[in-house]
Amino acid sequence: MLIKRQREWELPESAVTSESFAFNRRAALAAMGGAVLGFGTIGSARAESVTKMTIEDPGYSAGAMRFDPGRPMTPQKNVERYNNFYEFGLSKDIWQDAQTLPVEPWTIRIDGLVEKPFTLSFDDLIKKVKVETRIYRHRCVEAWAITVPWEGFAMSDLVKLAKPLSSAKYLRFTTFADAKAMPGLAIPFFPWPYHEGLTMAEATNELAFMGTGMYHQPMPKQDGAPIRAVLPWKYGFKSAKSIVRIEFIKDQPETFWEQTSPDMYGFWANVNPQYPTLRWSQARERIIGTDETVPTVIYNGYGKWVASLYAGMKQDKKLFM
Ligand SMILES: Nc1nc2c(c(=O)[nH]1)N[C@H]1C(S)=C(S)[C@@H](COP(=O)(O)O)O[C@H]1N2
Ligand SMILES: [Mo]
Image (cartoon, rainbow, N blue to C red; front, side, top):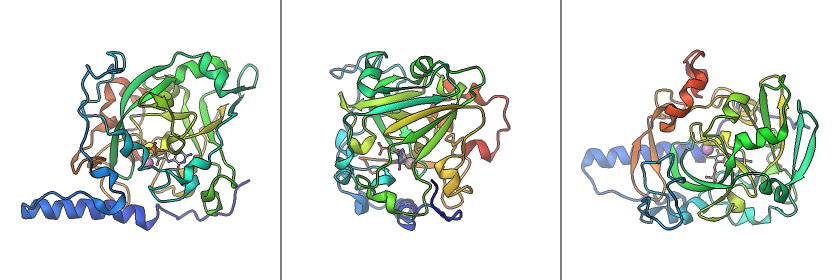
């Protein structure tokens, strides 16, 4: 059931001002030729040095490097202690609170326009797919970025298992929601549970991934245990965490963020530095774990794999917000 919500609501002031403040401060420092400071405002783990990723690193095969991120991996600790998971609150520092997420047993409901709706356990699902490592860049709409060695499987494997009917044109993902475990559900203006969507073509694109772990370990709760979407060419909010249901549907689903803030966050949300949000630029991104910002690239640099998905479409703001 949808709780009454405020359609004009945008990201909390704290989240946004921290971003614009960081950039302004950086620009000011650069202009003064000043020393580089860490952005100490949101958690200190971020200031740690970055691990240099090379193909020789133990455990990461050439396969994992198939989509060469071209950047060092973000230290594990930074990825695990700087999160967006609004079910646990609006701060980035929810990793401890998220430990109440009950992940065992975990079941996923597959329904809608499929041959036969079914529910399967996470443990059964993982036996039916080919688990691999992929190192991807992740670009949040708030203009920060991480590079993560995910473990998981191709989203297309899941689509195959689901046996969608030809009438299915979209997928709708729903996240676990239990007010007992998740204090954020008490924030009334959000249309809980968190829900997101993709076209079938997007979900079966080679890049679309279901994450079940990172850094050779099971997915931490705060990062979306036990299973989440990983869609590296889109803003991070498309990658729903802790998924409990996948519906195959005919019409484009309205997403959590479209319902919350339709002027800011759209269905497509493909990364593009040319389209600012209403409130901040998308031209650059801040690399978590460093004090660097770098230019943002269209489709987060994954255009080679995904640009063709949008070839017939109007290349306007809608596609990139
Ligand atoms: N269920 C759920 N999924 C979510 C979110 C959320 O608040 N709830 N935040 C999204 C956003 S905005 C981002 S940037 C990524 C963050 O993933 P990370 O914390 O593992 O880096 O998760 C996405 N998936
Ligand atoms: Mo995000």
